[in-house]
Each structure stands twice: as structure tokens, then as C-alpha cells.
Length: 102
View: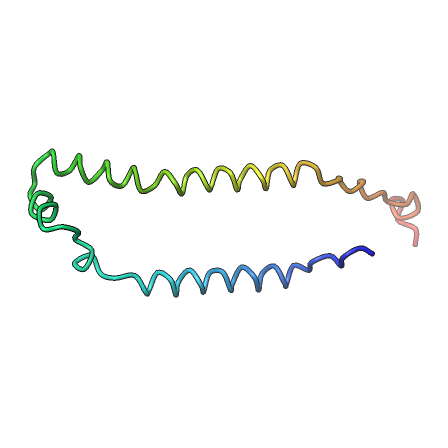
């Protein structure tokens, strides 16, 4: 037996739940002052030194790569799923409706 198709209102409700969960998770993250790491890194990165800026950028780059890899894999899976779905045939209009007769 075939599963019933999902309605658009159900999808919107699911997207709203995901957005609320993301906001809840973001509000629970600690402040930047609590996540300074070791004392050596905090004192080294506190200045306006170009090396400190390069170190910050490299940390952001390394932290973003897992998200990029998972995002690319997810996008590929969605693309493969949508590519295999059958297309609906075009809607054909009756000749009587085109001529204006009811």
C-alpha cells in the first residue's frame, strides 16, 4: 500500500518547527567571553597583529569545512531525489474551453 502524499501545510509546519529548534539552539550557546580557550591563545589573539588575524581566519576556515562537506552531500542527495521524480504531464485544455463555449 502506498503512503499518502505530504501536504504543503505539513511541510510548512515542519519547517517552522526546525526554525524554532535552530533558534532555541542558538540562544543556548555561551557568550564569546566564555569560549576563549586557553590563556595563551587568548593573549596571543587579542592584539591587532596580522598573524592573529590570519590565525582567526584559519580557525574559521577549519570550522566551516565539516558544514560545507555535509551541506554538499545533502544537496547532492536532494538533487538526485528530485531528478528521479516523474514529471507531471502538461495540462491539456479542451477545445470547447479554448473557443469560449461553455
